Length: 413
Image 1 (cartoon, helix red, strand yellow):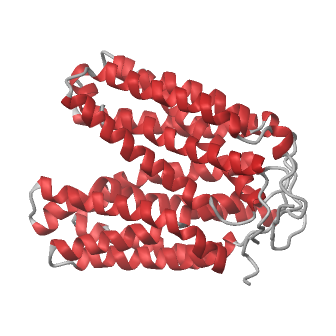
Image 2 (cartoon, rainbow, N blue to C red):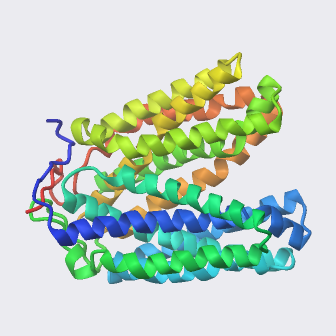
Protein backbone atom coordinates (compact mmCIF):
# COMPACT_ATOMS: atom_id res chain seq x y z
CA UNK A 1 0.00 0.00 0.00
CA UNK A 2 1.48 3.39 -0.96
CA UNK A 3 2.51 5.63 1.91
CA UNK A 4 0.30 8.50 0.74
CA UNK A 5 -2.84 6.41 0.47
CA UNK A 6 -5.85 7.03 2.68
CA UNK A 7 -6.80 3.85 4.50
CA UNK A 8 -10.19 2.27 4.04
CA UNK A 9 -12.38 1.55 7.03
CA UNK A 10 -15.49 -0.61 6.54
CA UNK A 11 -17.26 0.82 9.61
CA UNK A 12 -18.88 4.08 8.44
CA UNK A 13 -21.20 5.65 11.06
CA UNK A 14 -24.65 6.78 9.95
CA UNK A 15 -23.88 10.40 10.90
CA UNK A 16 -20.86 10.43 8.61
CA UNK A 17 -22.73 8.77 5.76
CA UNK A 18 -25.43 11.44 6.06
CA UNK A 19 -22.79 14.16 6.01
CA UNK A 20 -21.39 12.68 2.81
CA UNK A 21 -24.84 12.93 1.21
CA UNK A 22 -25.06 16.52 2.44
CA UNK A 23 -21.77 17.43 0.79
CA UNK A 24 -22.77 15.74 -2.48
CA UNK A 25 -26.03 17.69 -2.49
CA UNK A 26 -24.31 20.98 -1.66
CA UNK A 27 -21.90 20.65 -4.56
CA UNK A 28 -24.83 19.77 -6.82
CA UNK A 29 -27.00 22.75 -5.90
CA UNK A 30 -24.11 25.22 -6.13
CA UNK A 31 -23.34 23.97 -9.65
CA UNK A 32 -27.05 24.12 -10.44
CA UNK A 33 -27.26 27.73 -9.31
CA UNK A 34 -24.16 28.77 -11.23
CA UNK A 35 -25.64 27.33 -14.43
CA UNK A 36 -28.71 29.53 -14.01
CA UNK A 37 -26.42 32.56 -14.16
CA UNK A 38 -24.34 31.29 -17.08
CA UNK A 39 -27.31 30.62 -19.35
CA UNK A 40 -28.67 34.08 -18.48
CA UNK A 41 -25.59 36.02 -19.63
CA UNK A 42 -26.88 36.79 -23.18
CA UNK A 43 -30.18 38.11 -21.81
CA UNK A 44 -28.40 40.18 -19.16
CA UNK A 45 -26.13 41.70 -21.79
CA UNK A 46 -29.13 42.60 -23.91
CA UNK A 47 -31.02 44.04 -20.93
CA UNK A 48 -28.11 46.25 -19.84
CA UNK A 49 -27.06 47.20 -23.38
CA UNK A 50 -23.35 46.69 -22.68
CA UNK A 51 -20.73 45.65 -25.22
CA UNK A 52 -18.83 42.36 -25.28
CA UNK A 53 -15.75 44.16 -24.02
CA UNK A 54 -17.58 45.70 -21.09
CA UNK A 55 -19.15 42.35 -20.25
CA UNK A 56 -15.71 40.76 -20.22
CA UNK A 57 -14.44 43.34 -17.75
CA UNK A 58 -17.49 42.92 -15.53
CA UNK A 59 -16.97 39.16 -15.46
CA UNK A 60 -13.57 39.90 -13.98
CA UNK A 61 -15.42 41.80 -11.25
CA UNK A 62 -17.32 38.57 -10.59
CA UNK A 63 -13.98 36.83 -10.19
CA UNK A 64 -12.66 39.57 -7.92
CA UNK A 65 -15.66 39.17 -5.65
CA UNK A 66 -15.02 35.44 -5.57
CA UNK A 67 -11.40 35.83 -4.52
CA UNK A 68 -12.37 38.29 -1.76
CA UNK A 69 -15.09 35.97 -0.51
CA UNK A 70 -12.69 33.03 -0.43
CA UNK A 71 -10.11 34.84 1.64
CA UNK A 72 -12.61 36.30 4.12
CA UNK A 73 -14.53 33.08 4.69
CA UNK A 74 -11.45 31.04 5.59
CA UNK A 75 -11.08 32.97 8.85
CA UNK A 76 -14.82 32.75 9.57
CA UNK A 77 -14.84 28.98 9.08
CA UNK A 78 -11.87 28.72 11.41
CA UNK A 79 -14.05 30.10 14.23
CA UNK A 80 -17.57 28.91 13.39
CA UNK A 81 -17.08 25.72 11.37
CA UNK A 82 -17.99 25.04 7.76
CA UNK A 83 -21.55 23.83 8.42
CA UNK A 84 -22.75 27.20 9.71
CA UNK A 85 -20.75 29.09 7.10
CA UNK A 86 -22.06 26.90 4.28
CA UNK A 87 -25.63 27.66 5.36
CA UNK A 88 -24.94 31.40 5.54
CA UNK A 89 -23.01 31.47 2.27
CA UNK A 90 -25.76 29.56 0.48
CA UNK A 91 -28.27 32.13 1.68
CA UNK A 92 -26.13 34.90 0.20
CA UNK A 93 -25.68 32.79 -2.94
CA UNK A 94 -29.43 32.43 -3.47
CA UNK A 95 -29.84 36.21 -3.19
CA UNK A 96 -26.71 36.99 -5.17
CA UNK A 97 -27.55 34.90 -8.24
CA UNK A 98 -30.75 36.93 -8.66
CA UNK A 99 -29.07 40.34 -8.55
CA UNK A 100 -27.39 40.43 -12.01
CA UNK A 101 -30.60 39.66 -13.92
CA UNK A 102 -32.24 42.74 -12.39
CA UNK A 103 -29.40 45.12 -13.31
CA UNK A 104 -30.26 47.86 -15.79
CA UNK A 105 -26.79 49.21 -16.54
CA UNK A 106 -23.08 48.53 -16.38
CA UNK A 107 -22.55 49.98 -12.89
CA UNK A 108 -25.48 48.10 -11.40
CA UNK A 109 -24.36 44.89 -13.07
CA UNK A 110 -20.84 45.35 -11.76
CA UNK A 111 -22.05 45.75 -8.18
CA UNK A 112 -24.38 42.77 -8.56
CA UNK A 113 -21.59 40.58 -9.92
CA UNK A 114 -19.25 41.65 -7.13
CA UNK A 115 -21.81 40.55 -4.53
CA UNK A 116 -22.65 37.32 -6.35
CA UNK A 117 -18.95 36.57 -6.77
CA UNK A 118 -18.36 37.10 -3.06
CA UNK A 119 -21.15 34.65 -2.19
CA UNK A 120 -19.91 32.10 -4.72
CA UNK A 121 -16.35 32.29 -3.41
CA UNK A 122 -17.57 31.93 0.18
CA UNK A 123 -19.72 28.86 -0.48
CA UNK A 124 -16.96 27.32 -2.63
CA UNK A 125 -14.45 27.35 0.22
CA UNK A 126 -17.06 26.36 2.84
CA UNK A 127 -18.26 23.28 0.98
CA UNK A 128 -14.70 22.22 0.12
CA UNK A 129 -13.71 22.62 3.75
CA UNK A 130 -16.60 20.35 4.78
CA UNK A 131 -15.63 17.93 2.00
CA UNK A 132 -12.08 17.69 3.37
CA UNK A 133 -13.41 16.86 6.85
CA UNK A 134 -15.90 14.26 5.60
CA UNK A 135 -13.31 12.63 3.35
CA UNK A 136 -10.78 12.50 6.17
CA UNK A 137 -13.30 10.87 8.50
CA UNK A 138 -14.59 8.58 5.77
CA UNK A 139 -11.19 6.93 5.47
CA UNK A 140 -10.84 6.84 1.70
CA UNK A 141 -10.70 9.30 -1.22
CA UNK A 142 -14.10 10.75 -2.17
CA UNK A 143 -13.20 14.36 -3.02
CA UNK A 144 -13.28 13.92 -6.80
CA UNK A 145 -16.81 12.56 -6.68
CA UNK A 146 -17.90 15.66 -4.74
CA UNK A 147 -16.53 17.85 -7.53
CA UNK A 148 -18.23 15.68 -10.14
CA UNK A 149 -21.57 16.51 -8.57
CA UNK A 150 -20.89 20.22 -9.13
CA UNK A 151 -20.59 19.42 -12.85
CA UNK A 152 -23.73 17.27 -12.79
CA UNK A 153 -25.58 20.09 -11.05
CA UNK A 154 -24.35 22.52 -13.68
CA UNK A 155 -25.67 20.30 -16.47
CA UNK A 156 -29.05 20.01 -14.74
CA UNK A 157 -29.19 23.77 -14.23
CA UNK A 158 -28.36 24.41 -17.87
CA UNK A 159 -31.12 22.04 -18.99
CA UNK A 160 -33.63 23.83 -16.76
CA UNK A 161 -32.45 27.17 -18.12
CA UNK A 162 -32.94 25.97 -21.68
CA UNK A 163 -36.41 24.65 -20.80
CA UNK A 164 -37.48 27.98 -19.29
CA UNK A 165 -36.29 29.79 -22.41
CA UNK A 166 -38.30 27.43 -24.62
CA UNK A 167 -41.30 28.05 -22.36
CA UNK A 168 -40.91 31.79 -22.93
CA UNK A 169 -40.29 32.71 -19.29
CA UNK A 170 -38.38 35.90 -18.57
CA UNK A 171 -34.83 35.58 -17.35
CA UNK A 172 -35.77 37.02 -13.95
CA UNK A 173 -38.45 34.37 -13.44
CA UNK A 174 -36.17 31.60 -14.69
CA UNK A 175 -33.38 32.50 -12.27
CA UNK A 176 -35.88 32.92 -9.44
CA UNK A 177 -37.14 29.37 -10.03
CA UNK A 178 -33.59 27.98 -10.11
CA UNK A 179 -32.55 29.85 -6.98
CA UNK A 180 -35.68 28.71 -5.16
CA UNK A 181 -34.69 25.12 -5.89
CA UNK A 182 -31.19 25.87 -4.58
CA UNK A 183 -32.72 27.32 -1.39
CA UNK A 184 -34.93 24.27 -0.88
CA UNK A 185 -31.95 21.99 -1.44
CA UNK A 186 -29.93 23.96 1.08
CA UNK A 187 -32.65 23.74 3.72
CA UNK A 188 -32.93 19.98 3.24
CA UNK A 189 -29.29 18.96 2.94
CA UNK A 190 -27.05 21.46 4.77
CA UNK A 191 -28.42 20.20 8.08
CA UNK A 192 -26.74 16.86 7.29
CA UNK A 193 -23.26 18.40 7.38
CA UNK A 194 -20.90 17.89 10.30
CA UNK A 195 -21.14 20.66 12.91
CA UNK A 196 -18.11 22.48 14.26
CA UNK A 197 -17.87 20.42 17.46
CA UNK A 198 -18.02 17.16 15.47
CA UNK A 199 -15.68 18.41 12.74
CA UNK A 200 -13.06 19.55 15.20
CA UNK A 201 -11.78 16.03 15.60
CA UNK A 202 -11.55 14.18 12.37
CA UNK A 203 -10.89 10.64 13.45
CA UNK A 204 -8.76 9.24 16.22
CA UNK A 205 -5.83 8.35 14.05
CA UNK A 206 -5.42 11.47 11.96
CA UNK A 207 -3.76 13.74 14.50
CA UNK A 208 -5.81 16.56 12.96
CA UNK A 209 -7.52 19.14 15.15
CA UNK A 210 -9.28 22.17 13.72
CA UNK A 211 -8.63 24.94 16.23
CA UNK A 212 -10.53 28.21 16.33
CA UNK A 213 -7.24 30.06 16.58
CA UNK A 214 -4.77 29.81 13.69
CA UNK A 215 -1.19 29.06 14.66
CA UNK A 216 2.14 29.97 13.16
CA UNK A 217 3.19 27.73 10.29
CA UNK A 218 6.56 26.12 9.91
CA UNK A 219 8.71 27.01 6.92
CA UNK A 220 8.19 23.56 5.44
CA UNK A 221 4.41 23.90 5.62
CA UNK A 222 4.51 27.38 4.10
CA UNK A 223 6.51 26.04 1.18
CA UNK A 224 4.06 23.21 0.66
CA UNK A 225 1.11 25.60 0.71
CA UNK A 226 2.82 27.80 -1.87
CA UNK A 227 3.36 24.67 -3.95
CA UNK A 228 -0.33 23.76 -3.65
CA UNK A 229 -1.25 27.27 -4.75
CA UNK A 230 1.04 27.08 -7.76
CA UNK A 231 -0.38 23.69 -8.73
CA UNK A 232 -3.95 24.93 -8.36
CA UNK A 233 -3.19 28.05 -10.39
CA UNK A 234 -1.55 26.13 -13.25
CA UNK A 235 -4.16 23.39 -13.50
CA UNK A 236 -7.18 25.67 -13.12
CA UNK A 237 -5.60 27.82 -15.85
CA UNK A 238 -5.44 24.79 -18.14
CA UNK A 239 -9.05 23.92 -17.37
CA UNK A 240 -10.17 27.47 -18.06
CA UNK A 241 -8.53 27.33 -21.48
CA UNK A 242 -10.73 24.37 -22.44
CA UNK A 243 -13.84 26.16 -21.16
CA UNK A 244 -13.26 29.31 -23.17
CA UNK A 245 -11.18 28.39 -26.21
CA UNK A 246 -11.95 24.79 -27.21
CA UNK A 247 -14.82 25.66 -29.56
CA UNK A 248 -13.04 28.65 -31.11
CA UNK A 249 -9.92 26.55 -31.65
CA UNK A 250 -11.95 24.02 -33.65
CA UNK A 251 -13.32 26.86 -35.78
CA UNK A 252 -9.92 28.44 -36.46
CA UNK A 253 -7.77 25.31 -36.65
CA UNK A 254 -10.14 23.07 -38.63
CA UNK A 255 -12.55 25.56 -40.21
CA UNK A 256 -15.66 24.06 -38.59
CA UNK A 257 -19.02 25.79 -38.15
CA UNK A 258 -19.78 27.07 -34.68
CA UNK A 259 -22.55 24.53 -34.00
CA UNK A 260 -20.20 21.62 -34.69
CA UNK A 261 -17.26 23.21 -32.86
CA UNK A 262 -19.34 23.42 -29.68
CA UNK A 263 -18.97 19.65 -29.39
CA UNK A 264 -15.33 20.21 -28.43
CA UNK A 265 -16.24 21.78 -25.09
CA UNK A 266 -19.09 19.30 -24.56
CA UNK A 267 -16.63 16.41 -24.99
CA UNK A 268 -14.23 17.97 -22.49
CA UNK A 269 -16.98 18.63 -19.94
CA UNK A 270 -18.42 15.11 -20.14
CA UNK A 271 -14.99 13.50 -19.83
CA UNK A 272 -14.21 15.68 -16.80
CA UNK A 273 -17.41 14.58 -15.08
CA UNK A 274 -16.93 10.89 -15.86
CA UNK A 275 -13.31 11.08 -14.74
CA UNK A 276 -14.22 12.66 -11.41
CA UNK A 277 -16.78 9.96 -10.74
CA UNK A 278 -14.14 7.26 -11.16
CA UNK A 279 -10.76 8.70 -10.13
CA UNK A 280 -11.29 8.29 -6.38
CA UNK A 281 -10.68 4.56 -6.74
CA UNK A 282 -7.35 5.28 -8.41
CA UNK A 283 -6.39 7.73 -5.67
CA UNK A 284 -7.36 5.17 -3.05
CA UNK A 285 -5.17 2.49 -4.58
CA UNK A 286 -2.14 4.46 -5.76
CA UNK A 287 -2.29 7.71 -3.78
CA UNK A 288 -2.91 11.39 -4.63
CA UNK A 289 0.58 12.05 -6.00
CA UNK A 290 0.04 9.31 -8.58
CA UNK A 291 -3.22 10.95 -9.70
CA UNK A 292 -1.64 14.40 -10.01
CA UNK A 293 1.48 13.12 -11.76
CA UNK A 294 -0.13 10.89 -14.35
CA UNK A 295 -3.30 12.93 -14.62
CA UNK A 296 -1.28 16.01 -15.56
CA UNK A 297 0.81 13.97 -17.97
CA UNK A 298 -2.34 12.57 -19.58
CA UNK A 299 -3.79 16.07 -19.86
CA UNK A 300 -0.60 17.29 -21.58
CA UNK A 301 -0.80 14.40 -24.05
CA UNK A 302 -4.43 15.18 -24.80
CA UNK A 303 -3.71 18.85 -25.42
CA UNK A 304 -0.78 17.96 -27.68
CA UNK A 305 -3.13 15.74 -29.68
CA UNK A 306 -5.55 18.65 -30.03
CA UNK A 307 -2.74 20.88 -31.32
CA UNK A 308 -1.55 18.30 -33.87
CA UNK A 309 -5.00 17.08 -34.89
CA UNK A 310 -5.77 16.99 -38.63
CA UNK A 311 -9.45 16.07 -38.15
CA UNK A 312 -12.27 16.92 -35.78
CA UNK A 313 -12.69 13.32 -34.61
CA UNK A 314 -9.07 13.33 -33.46
CA UNK A 315 -9.62 16.72 -31.80
CA UNK A 316 -12.54 15.32 -29.82
CA UNK A 317 -10.41 12.40 -28.68
CA UNK A 318 -7.76 14.88 -27.59
CA UNK A 319 -10.23 16.93 -25.55
CA UNK A 320 -11.60 13.75 -23.98
CA UNK A 321 -8.09 12.69 -22.94
CA UNK A 322 -7.40 16.20 -21.65
CA UNK A 323 -10.59 16.17 -19.57
CA UNK A 324 -9.98 12.73 -18.11
CA UNK A 325 -6.43 13.71 -17.21
CA UNK A 326 -7.42 16.92 -15.44
CA UNK A 327 -10.51 15.48 -13.77
CA UNK A 328 -8.90 14.22 -10.60
CA UNK A 329 -5.92 16.48 -10.03
CA UNK A 330 -7.54 19.53 -8.43
CA UNK A 331 -9.50 17.51 -5.83
CA UNK A 332 -6.21 15.91 -4.71
CA UNK A 333 -4.69 19.37 -4.24
CA UNK A 334 -7.65 20.53 -2.14
CA UNK A 335 -7.45 17.41 0.01
CA UNK A 336 -3.74 17.94 0.58
CA UNK A 337 -4.23 21.64 1.38
CA UNK A 338 -6.94 20.79 3.89
CA UNK A 339 -4.70 18.30 5.67
CA UNK A 340 -1.33 20.04 5.63
CA UNK A 341 -1.83 21.87 8.94
CA UNK A 342 -3.52 20.54 12.04
CA UNK A 343 -4.79 23.98 13.10
CA UNK A 344 -5.08 26.12 9.97
CA UNK A 345 -7.20 24.00 7.63
CA UNK A 346 -9.81 26.55 6.60
CA UNK A 347 -7.43 29.47 6.09
CA UNK A 348 -4.93 27.50 4.05
CA UNK A 349 -7.64 25.86 1.97
CA UNK A 350 -9.13 29.27 1.17
CA UNK A 351 -5.76 30.47 -0.11
CA UNK A 352 -5.23 27.45 -2.34
CA UNK A 353 -8.79 27.58 -3.70
CA UNK A 354 -8.31 31.30 -4.31
CA UNK A 355 -5.09 30.67 -6.24
CA UNK A 356 -6.90 28.18 -8.42
CA UNK A 357 -9.74 30.62 -9.00
CA UNK A 358 -7.29 33.29 -10.14
CA UNK A 359 -5.77 30.79 -12.56
CA UNK A 360 -9.19 29.95 -13.92
CA UNK A 361 -9.83 33.63 -14.59
CA UNK A 362 -6.38 34.46 -15.91
CA UNK A 363 -5.97 31.43 -18.16
CA UNK A 364 -8.36 32.35 -20.99
CA UNK A 365 -7.10 35.95 -21.04
CA UNK A 366 -3.44 34.87 -21.06
CA UNK A 367 -3.92 32.30 -23.82
CA UNK A 368 -6.01 34.80 -25.78
CA UNK A 369 -3.24 37.39 -25.57
CA UNK A 370 -0.57 34.91 -26.61
CA UNK A 371 -2.87 33.57 -29.32
CA UNK A 372 -3.21 37.04 -30.81
CA UNK A 373 0.55 37.02 -31.25
CA UNK A 374 1.39 33.47 -32.38
CA UNK A 375 -2.02 31.95 -33.12
CA UNK A 376 -4.41 30.08 -30.86
CA UNK A 377 -3.12 26.62 -31.74
CA UNK A 378 0.45 27.41 -30.72
CA UNK A 379 -0.79 29.31 -27.67
CA UNK A 380 -2.14 26.01 -26.36
CA UNK A 381 1.49 25.11 -25.80
CA UNK A 382 1.39 27.33 -22.71
CA UNK A 383 -1.15 25.26 -20.72
CA UNK A 384 0.58 22.14 -22.04
CA UNK A 385 3.83 23.26 -20.41
CA UNK A 386 1.94 24.09 -17.22
CA UNK A 387 0.60 20.52 -17.11
CA UNK A 388 4.17 19.23 -17.43
CA UNK A 389 5.25 21.49 -14.56
CA UNK A 390 2.47 19.90 -12.49
CA UNK A 391 3.98 16.48 -13.23
CA UNK A 392 7.19 17.64 -11.56
CA UNK A 393 5.39 19.19 -8.57
CA UNK A 394 3.07 16.22 -8.01
CA UNK A 395 4.94 14.69 -5.00
CA UNK A 396 4.04 17.62 -2.75
CA UNK A 397 0.40 16.45 -2.49
CA UNK A 398 1.47 13.45 -0.40
CA UNK A 399 -0.72 13.77 2.69
CA UNK A 400 1.23 14.95 5.73
CA UNK A 401 0.14 16.96 8.75
CA UNK A 402 2.09 19.82 10.26
CA UNK A 403 2.07 18.29 13.73
CA UNK A 404 3.56 14.92 12.91
CA UNK A 405 5.38 15.72 9.70
CA UNK A 406 4.63 12.17 8.61
CA UNK A 407 2.31 10.67 6.08
CA UNK A 408 -1.31 10.76 7.20
CA UNK A 409 -3.24 7.52 6.96
CA UNK A 410 -6.55 8.29 8.63
CA UNK A 411 -9.05 5.71 9.73
CA UNK A 412 -12.40 6.21 11.31
CA UNK A 413 -13.45 4.12 14.26
